[in-house]
Image (cartoon, rainbow, N blue to C red; front, side):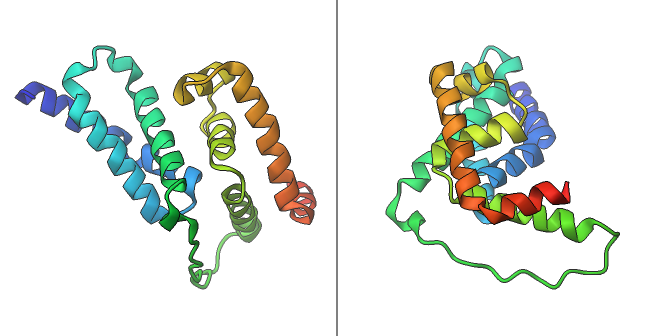
Length: 172
């Protein structure tokens, strides 16, 4: 890569690093794995930077790499172990913050129990705000597959959350 391309990549990386990391966290539920997924995406992007002609599609490309890397990692046997981290004590905070934190933690814990591809669809649709065709493009599948995976993922999430879903609804 020449100097100009390196600078373009560095600018893109600086602007999108945190957003990609957050999306990866929503997919995997672990900040360390999210860092690894984001790094994988940016390393892949850097290697192919000179071949990419449509700079408007960079976000879609990075999103696709993150999702595929997450799904690939869930297939690896050593990733099937789940470690529980102890949460730190919560500092005093504004009213309602504890409820929002509890709601977020419940949702993220529920997402971790949904199948990886369904989780990817749910995160891309409802947390990243992509439409059905956008998710289909990221995952490289048909819009019908996205719709069916969304329905199955939502049903799985409802089953996993059970009574917690009623608590979430009443907190809203």
